[in-house]
Length: 618
Image (cartoon, rainbow, N blue to C red; front, side, top):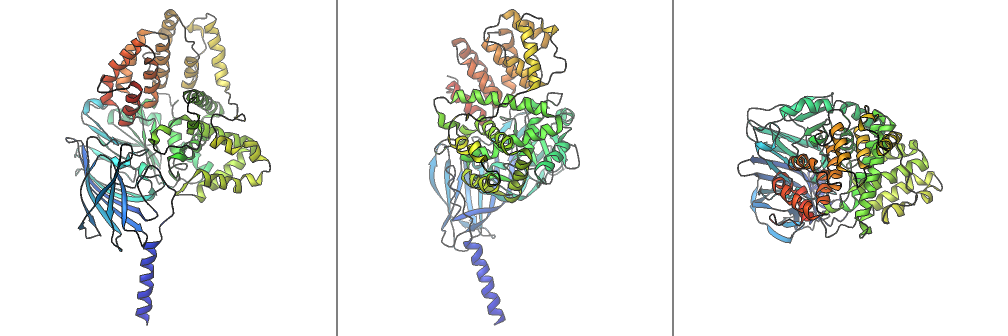
């Protein structure tokens, strides 16, 4: 009887693991059917081949399935699938291909037995795998060794490894990665701090993450500690400069925890990548990837680090269920970022960032005048590349909504709500509709009339900026206004009081320049302030845009060098867009892009290709 009862209990326990599958939101950008079969844990064993520009090995998935599920569906794109096995003993197994879509890739279908819990896929990437950016030694700072980094957001994880490539599906992972012995490998996981003599590195991520937060980088990399839980990785020649720029990382982490609760990822490190990285930063857990364009030398651009750190709560901890809910990741993160920078650098600094963000949002809204639905916070990206929705709408309109809530109910009340929100939904996903229900119940119910004042649905489901959008002002920019007016009235640049200006103030000054300025006056500014040759990428980009608008050709040689070396999409798009407005500008754009394109990541190439209607240089 004892044996029978225990055997029955064990059988029931096994059946419960087979039939209890989480109910997840439908994701139009993944072929996964998670309510039938869903991944839970990954063991990745791969080798990195710089000669062939491929990654090959196996992805072994521990899965959970419903009792009647007969297959599991994986997202793949530009991968070679060599063979499939099932069970821990890796019995050879069959697979088939399903839907093939230009955006989504090729559906991999693996049939399952009733008791299948492990599926192993032997595969390799191809040179067309868009997540991987392979750089030769000439494209690095050290010029000695090649470099690899990956970028999986939004749906490029499927080009790095076969996965269920939806932000709503989370898994833990371990990995063994073999690289050339003179290089070090890093992942979005527990990382080494120095090279070993085998070239084999083991990684572990014990918190469940979605596929877009998988990350790998390989190169000549060194580490320097910043604090007991923070540090920076970079190429050796960039390490000292990077450590100086990020000296406040530990303070940022502590300020963030005071606001919204404990940091749950162990360590927080930053890897400074070569300049072809297409974004400012990527919030890979435990290891933010960052562009070197934020190394201004005066720590004035560190808000990018506070933004990626804030993602450790909004995005990494509580994740948008699919990319239509992207604002839940980014709007919250921008609000959190500015609270961190305010705590460390004061309200004036945070106000400048908010003002510039709002100006950027207004320009973006103009770009979507003919497609107003694209300016909703809740997006409709079905059938589109979700990268199309990654613009300042989610970031700055989302921030403005949270700022309005703060001003309506008070900062303390919003802080208490957000802290509870992150804690109660940790390592879970969130839809826009679920968030609306949650905030109505847990916050607005305590403040009668607040919801009517805020008009949440107008912000989320309607275009543009609602009439109750908060007005954002900056005293530091009032200083810029006074000095700019002096210059407009004929004062020499030498006489302007600019000695203690932040980067943000210079950006505000340059943005104010009118569309018709004489070459003499542009030359005067450039001679005194050295805009064309500045090492500050933000200032350089703003100045190059004004140079194009005003036909200030002496800046073009510097702009060409900038566009060839820097692959950050934020900088590329405004300059190429402005060049495309004239015949001479188009010729210049094509000339520069032909040289620059091989240095850009797929994400940047895709955007510029479309803008320039690029077809093999034609």
